[in-house]
Image (cartoon, rainbow, N blue to C red; front, side, top):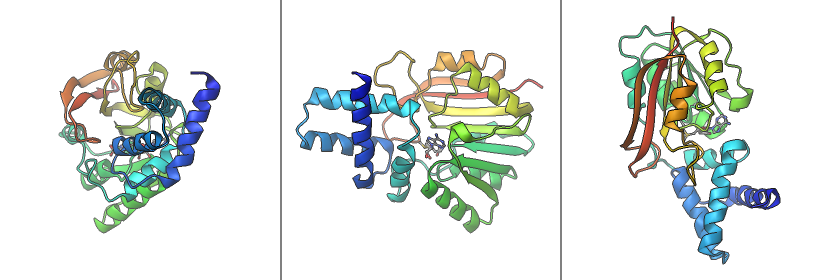
Length: 254
Ligand SMILES: C[S@@+](CC[C@H](N)C(=O)[O-])C[C@H]1O[C@@H](n2cnc3c(N)ncnc32)[C@H](O)[C@@H]1O
């Protein structure tokens, strides 16, 4: 595909988003777009090409995410877990509560769990609907969290600031060594990063925007103490079908 064609495919997708039916996760939203392309007369091969291009573009573009997740977070739920991430639940056992960051917090399932466990929690996300739900849920539970509307690239992680950082099912570059080094710098000594998402090799065709390459992730965090690492088939928290998942808890050496 030429850059011009990629751009056209992306812009058509962005233009369609406001009319997308309520979808309870990214997969059902993409299925709805596939149906739209099919109804418009595109061949199966062309549809496949369009969807692959969109998934690839989503890894590098930030426009689109707000509309996608505003749709999902107002659709009524059902297509993703609202319980705290089990790896995170296990990660804080025996740890003194401190300052936590929930990156791409969505509706704040992990933020609420951490606040309930005594942590001082900040989260950010581009989806105002996700943030509104997070603030509402926190207020109903009598919990305090800071929920900031911010794109990842504009968020200031600071230096030696966090005791815990959570990255669950987010399209951020955690497998990138430079990004991992930045997180290490933002953590207090002894602080941890908790990561869980879909897994695939960087060379795999049709990667989801939130896929992480397990080998690249391990390499990126080589300077950390790895407390937990899984590359397994499991039940993801953001679709219903079993999938290959990667899970990691990495600690900044004290
Ligand atoms: C699949 S959801 C995961 C939400 C949450 N981490 C969880 O596990 O429940 C991905 C989230 O990332 C957010 N997001 C995507 N791109 C973003 C960006 N560039 N900056 C901030 N948030 C972003 C979306 O709005 C969405 O809430």
